[in-house]
Length: 249
Image (cartoon, one colour):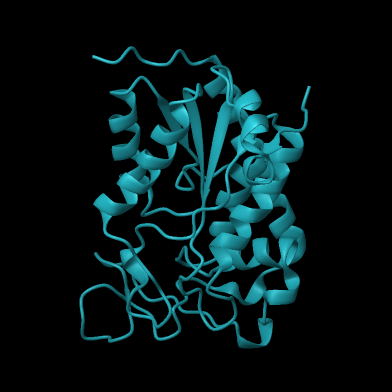
């Protein structure tokens, strides 16, 4: 049975002490607050998604939830003004430091509500570092699409950024920030490296910052993706509750 959790930032320290127990699952939301998403979506698209799921997990998952971390490792987007990326080591240390700080007071199970893909590498490194401290870290992996998301991806020739899926999600959760009149298809071939504005440089050339075709996005499709992803997060957290934290060497 689902039950309401705790928004850590709203608690006093004695209240925090009461909920930061050895059995608690602590959620660390991670979503870029400044990362390009084409001409039709704002820089804080990932942050808005993280905030949406963050609120649902507080309502439904019985977890302790931190404020959303707005910066991490996003090297694929730095060609576009406004996009910010930490280096991978700093991104890893940020998550490790957050979890280590709270683990001092009891929790041994952490879940990163992760709205990135390039963040997977630093999060795997953080999980290894925390395991050496007797702490379990698991995270959302958006590369493992469920059938609803995979079917929507398949409706465009290629792409995975500010595309049909992501734009549909934003129409479902924050339609007021989406400007569909500015949405454009950008379907350049895949290539090693990030998105680039200069066709002569290595990477996926995208003059718009879009990779995919957002023009057919709908709120209905986005709502189906959101439901699928939230169910996957809830399943991740349920599995994490059953894990036995490692014994430090």
